[in-house]
Image (cartoon, rainbow, N blue to C red; front, side, top):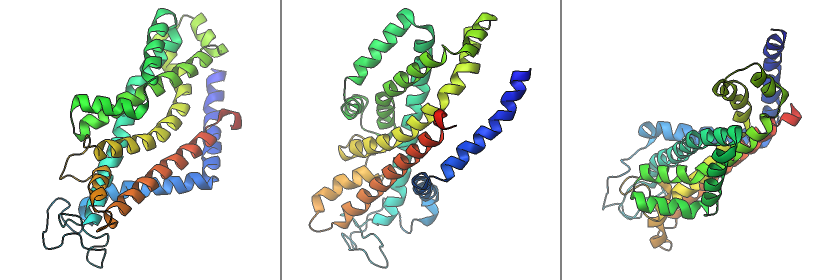
Length: 289
């Protein structure tokens, strides 16, 4: 009872220290601001976009940026600014959903592998190592080609490709945590393994998983853009930053703005998630708290 009360008292103080440290990290705040900006843009796209992002207009083909078309128009006369706003939805959705798939599949395997050990650990570890032997993007391209070109299949492919990262990370954390005295004590009093994993191990695994997930979102966004660039992601006429770059490569001389804005958007959102992930890693470092 005394230990439980002490934990309840210490937890708010620890949270305050983590929040204070995060707020003092300028890079983390810049990253959070960039991510928040693109999230708002994606949510508000239907309200903010001045034109239909998929409706062609053959009277305004490849118009340069102007007061009417802020980011210019593409090869079919579609407003690039409107397509950028709607493309933010596809990129953010691909990043968040694919990483969610990787976490939901990878963390349970890592928990089971690290906690129980033995032949279960051997099978899961060898399978994970085999998947990690294949470069992430190559694995995602192969899976997306097998599943078929679409945004949903691209998200599944990216999620499965990122899953081994979370299996290995979770397993390593569990191997360290299960040797702690409080876990040994829980076993000694006869608590079931399922309860020990949920109550004592999983909460301590979440912080590094959260950091890795934030950093992996950046990689997933690049992967989605790469798949869309190759025609394996979001399908025309629906906008995606990767597919916009794929089209823009054919008009670099006549309409360079078609590639400039999607490229800058991908750079900024990836930078934002990387800065945010680094800030979370520093704030959640147990050696600092």
